Image (cartoon, rainbow, N blue to C red):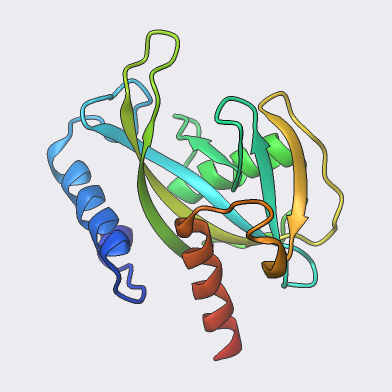
Length: 179
């Protein structure tokens, strides 16, 4: 809970709402990390992976949702920390080779709906987005994805990236330019 409480980004309605909804889930839900907790939803973990040039980000074309997104998914019991879930999902979905770091930075929060599927009701993913850096451009496509790609900011519209991805990338770029 402290990780989410301590998260700050430029105030906009969506970011603030996602932070508050995630804090509420963590405080009031008995199993917030369980993929079987549908009301109101559960925590998921995503990776915002920068290419070795630190300019482009890694995208997957999600097979089920039929759109370009950041790699990520559900928390597993074997994941020692929430960011380990994000790292595992990135590697499983893309084969990306990530720079080792003990605690990646929380780069964004986003609460979004997941459509009805195979007996699972519509529910919310309370997504924690962690920043990673790849040290090679080598990638591979997994069963969950139709394609993977490195995407430059000038191509965000081409990939129809959702606002939460654009916000997280902008925050990462702003932070790195001020260092």
